[in-house]
Image: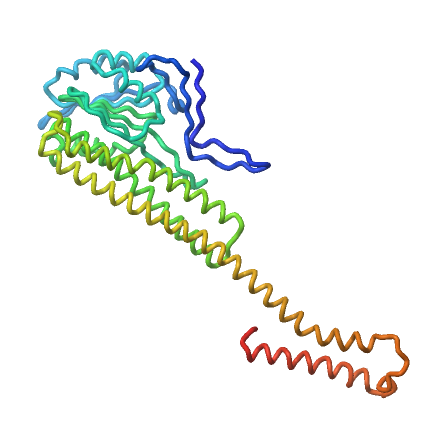
Length: 373
């Protein structure tokens, strides 16, 4: 099947310039049956990596697996299992795990379609969640996104990532140490812990963006440059991308918090409420940064206008001083014979230049007294 896929970091040509795009454009071939698995997105890892953590209050088993069949026993296990799959391009692997764990075909389709809007769906025996996670490239000051999906079952969680990363490492450390509720509260609490880790990563991105905004704002006030305008527009687009991804997370968490699924115990709802509060805080921060970047564009234009006014003021003062001097020079440069003062001996050094210097000096002092210079 042919796919037309636009990358999140494509370019739009306008004349000789290339403007980076922040939106993904995807068009799937028409007429495909619902649940058809076609990976849409970048292949970010050569071979899928499967890891498994099984645990209860007293024990923990952790291993990297070579085949997906090694996870099949987790479906009916009495202890909690966390299956993590890095890499979404192996359709055969996903079909196997979907068949064994009775995952709805539409869920599998959403997993391999990496342009999904964050959401959660209740399928009675399973809950499906999908989120976006971001990292900031400090060198080019550009945000890259990744889709993360979760399937929550009775005693298991299956997580799908586009590539290997460290977002879940704090959760793994908590499982290894066995402190707190995480080894006691089951798969619902593990889902909360994983989503909380992803939401917390937004704070790191916003902190870096906040530092960049402060530096750019200082530069705009002190020494605005033409390239600052493109930086402002680029930053506004990045914030728009973040906002577009965080708003649905708030709705998703609200649904999990108020849901009636037996897979989420009442004791876990308070923790989802805490993550929901974090999402609202992130949204407020994003809105604040958007207002700041809008104000930065005004600062940029005002700074350019002030600089231009300063230049025009200097040029106007110079022109004003030289206008009467030019008039005097023009009068005595005319080709007439009867200029009586031209016969005076000291008319040029003391008369002409004396008047020129005195008039120029008086105009300068006048402007100085008016505080125009």
